[in-house]
Image 1 (cartoon, protein in one colour):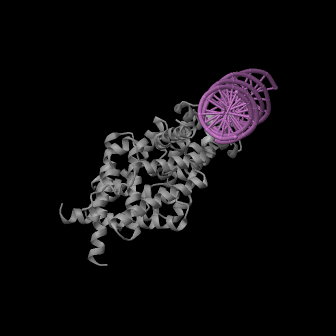
Image 2 (cartoon, chains in turn red, blue, cyan, brown):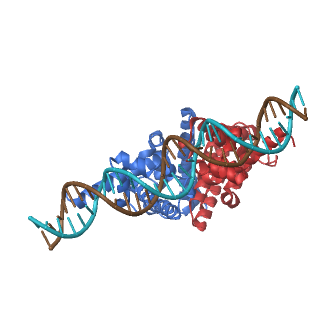
Image 3 (tube, rainbow over the protein chains, first blue to last red):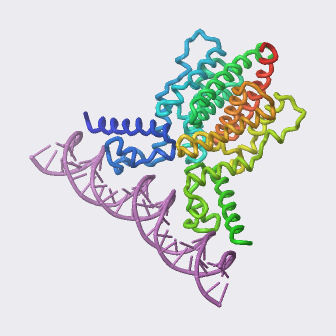
Length: 197
Length: 197
DNA sequence: ATATTGACATGATAAATATCATGTGAAATC
DNA sequence: GATTTCACATGATATTTATCATGTCAATAT
């Protein structure tokens, strides 16, 4: 392994761990010292790979988004738009997703912490949100953008709320209620356009 | 002012400031040193009033909830349940609420940070959520609890998402889309029960 | 009037934070 | 093979964190 390859591999390891920790422990929990120790290095070398903590946070956020791939592409092609939306929400609002934030969507994991981050980080987060909405529009066809925005907000909020509640029965109920509401919304959006517009 | 009164007054000042800062800057941003400095005291005296930082965070959370009062009680009595729900969501998802987190609802402000807090804090947060849902059930009548849960998740998520987005046009669109979705849901819940159940 | 209490100040501690300066050894280049 | 480069280690700095021990002075109790 050449030196450049080794450096790239190290950077990958840092990023992988950082993106997991960012999702599990948030912006504040993701500390340089601990991160490097867990990678098996010391903290000093960190700045060879990233110019600052904020740069790391941004890269880790983007890495996390990349890891997820595009969930819209993964849907089977022969579903109606409403069914596609229901599936997206159902997968997002799954117990497995709630229980594994470190491999899940960072948008929900960081939702209320974003305003306390730096300007660049906020910009990067907003770009991820915009990209997610674009993915949906491209795959599901043009609809009033507010439809997907509301479904996204419900998914982000429902997942974050479920994670915030220590009682698992209540937490399950939150996921169920939000999946149900997403389904109602998905159908209502179609009805509304089909019925009148 | 007696000594006990003075102590109580000091405690109030600490709590007021802490509850504002908790909502504006989150769990991590609310530091004892800065807090006491801004109250006009030094950090040492803090532990006369609170046994720990977590105790402060819990008290500040409860103070914030208390400040808001019960928004359900503030609704005019002659509205239908669906109209009441729409109003609640509309007020929650208002630009003024988004722009003043320090006087707003802490449930949304702390949404994604709760899992990183201590056990006691999480418990306290969950109790606030439960109380909010109870308030609604009492005032609006018995309905499947999932209905209000989903409306709450949509409101929390929508507000947090709006605060996370730096572009004000996009942020406004989020608020609008979530208000609209809340209205659709509120009507759909009534239709569903009226139509079949 | 004297003794006591207790709210707060001062200052210390210990841990954790981000960041950087310098050293070192091995890989890459000549 | 000698020289250079650079990824990373070591260790330092400066800040911030929660927490506590001790001192002080004014309000209370006796």
